[in-house]
Structures are given as C-alpha cells and as structure tokens.
Image 1 (cartoon, rainbow over the protein chains, first blue to last red):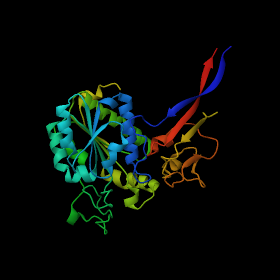
Image 2: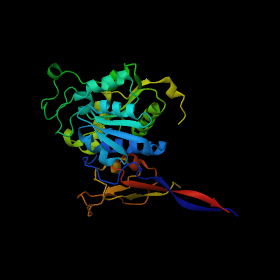
Image 3: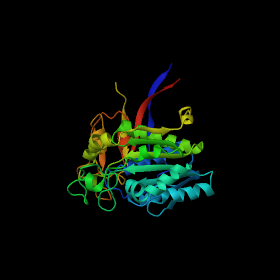
Image 4: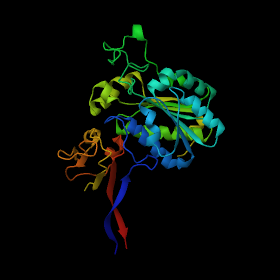
Length: 259
Length: 77
C-alpha cells in the first residue's frame, strides 16, 4: 500500500555568494534586495569562483564586504573604466560593476557612456534611488522634478537644476549596448522580474553580446523621510511614472536563449 | 487544505523594517515585541498558524534573513 507522508522542503535560504555579515544599509533599503538577487543569479549560474566585482563609491561602496567573491574598489564614478581594464586583461572572468545613481549617473556619466559605446563586455547593476544616499540625501541627476532633498528643500526646480536623466533609455541608443533594461524592486512581482533581468544581463556577458545594464528603481527610506513600506509605495506612485519599467535594448540573440 | 509551511528567522540579520510583515499574504508575521537582536532591532517572527511557505517574505527581505520551508507530500511504498 502507498503511504502518503508529509515532508518538509526547503523553499528559500540565503544565497551562498552572500557573505555571512550584517550589511550597513538602513532598515528597509532595497540595496539588500539587489545584493541578494545578484548573489542568487551567481549561485544559479555557478560562476562564483569566476566572478570579479567592481564596487563604486556611495552606499554601495562596501559591496566588497557583502559578496563572497573577488572584488576591487574603483574611484568615484570610474567603475566602468576599471571593469573595462579587468575584463580586457581577464576576458574569461565575469566582470560586474555595482553602482548607485550618484556614482553612475552623475560623476561617472562619462565613463558609463563611453563603456557602453565601446561595447565593453561587462555587466552593470545600477541602483537608482533618486538621491545621494550616503552623504545625506542631496539632489542627484535622477531626483524627480519637485522632489524635496536636503539640497533642494523647496523641491527640485527644473528651471535651475534641469530635468532628471533617464539613464537606461539614453544608453539604449548606443550601438555597443547588448542588454539595457529598467526594473523596480518595490513588490514581489517586480523583484522576480528584476532577478530574471540580472540573469539575462550575465548571459549577455557570457555569450559576448556586449554591454549589459540593469537599472533597478530602489528606495532610500531614511533620506526620503518615509517608512520602508511607504518608500516602496512612493517608488510605485512617483518614480515608475517618470522612470517606466521596460526593455530598452535587447540583443535578438538573447530572445532565443533557454534558461 | 492549504499547504503548511514555516519560516526561520536569522535574528541577527533582521533589521525590523516590516516589509515582510506588510507583504505576507496570510498576515502571520509580526515584530517580536519583547525581544531585541544584537543590533537592537526587534526581529520578525511567526505569530500564528497559517504560514503556507509561499516565500514572499523571503523575496522582499532586503537582508536575506529568512529561511522558508514548505510541507510537501512524499509517497513511499
């Protein structure tokens, strides 16, 4: 006779590529979610021993402490340049940069545009939280019109400070880019979509299809002055209308990949 | 009957942000009111039966602090 018994199955555990340390991020900061997704993808692809990460300046500066693989630290905004060097010297290693918007979209804008235009075969994880998180929430190039920050207390005035930059759309116009998408980290569905995109970005690199970038809309509860849950809602209500989620450039070869 | 599950919390990673409390479809998570972890946060815990092991708390957790288990049927002769 057949016996039916119940047994316990592990649904989720901390990925191996994440180091066993507490992060310095504020409670509810979605940097942690982005770290976790990157670590899960690296575990799934089995490329942990073949990875080299490039940390940027900003809240993400300590990324080298939180991932359990090789890391180097770049000067402010220069992570794509450093990643270019690493990838050209070690073409068989996977090279990733992990940058925030104050690093990538501000001081490092020249570097990222040049790296994408050259079609460097690197993967960039770009966290967009609409301000400079580490230094106290000043206005960044990605700050929304009218958004109050510590350096724009009356809200961003577009006549003085200009308009926010949509990085993913801009980089998608460059021929060297193979995979450029924007995703959000504000709810379970979008987090799952973000993970799939990070996987595809690494697949782009694996197959030598050029520059890949995943822009992740992220929260900064401390500097926005909101609770973590309110901050997720603000991403949905205020950021997504300005920064629409979408695929801006996908190399046709990626569509045929079976993952 | 809905599937049964449970979570384990790695207390020292939890920062009490309450994102999982808000996201839990069954509403069975709360911050422990009388317990603090090493960093001084109230860690999250299961407060009652009803966890289905769906894993949504682990998907939204920024600290990867949750381990999720689900009971599945196993047939043996």
